Image 1 (cartoon, rainbow, N blue to C red):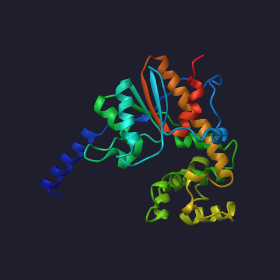
Image 2: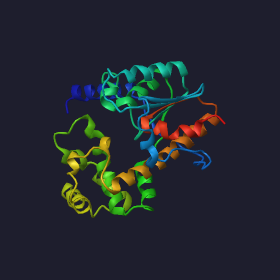
Image 3: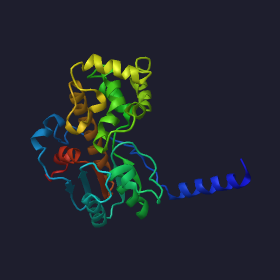
Length: 274
């Protein structure tokens, strides 16, 4: 590589690093307290006509339950900023996998949805960011107590696709899920899921009369045991969210948390005034 190319590469890397704001899973010191009530996800359908966004708030926290979006013009994005400014949080929490905030020349909402907006606000105001969520490997290992390893592996591989299909079908669904095949290793299923063809094989075995996974979105519910698995997953994730929020609030932090609207609805009872 020519010296000028090396210099340009170095400058670009420096610019990217300087403009990024990283996050990680919150290092929870405590565990979920069973006395903290929440709505089991299996019962969520009773509440599904709730307002969107669904906001749970006090002087010390905001849980902004969003309808997932990657549209920077969605009114929720301005609402997130308004709630942030009113609270002036000392800690921000996002849903899902943590990582770097996109550099300033990339629209964070187009890239990461409502999470991206919160990450961008946290960078602007120099507020630490964590994910309130469970790491995928930890979640998978908890799920095998209720579901087979093959069932858990299939869900872990396909869940990102199910969740993203509402934003448009990728040009190649097969390429989209390839990077998630490694998740099968979480539950020792790596020999069973080496290729996309293996995903097709297991899908047809488990769901012979349902539509193909390429046409399946979690926006409209998942077939068979995948719906039950999703419900148990959401309960475990909501327990983690409650525990993280409670721990931070006990430290007198002011917490802004972003999540899907169903999470906000389900965890609200844990924050009801007694």
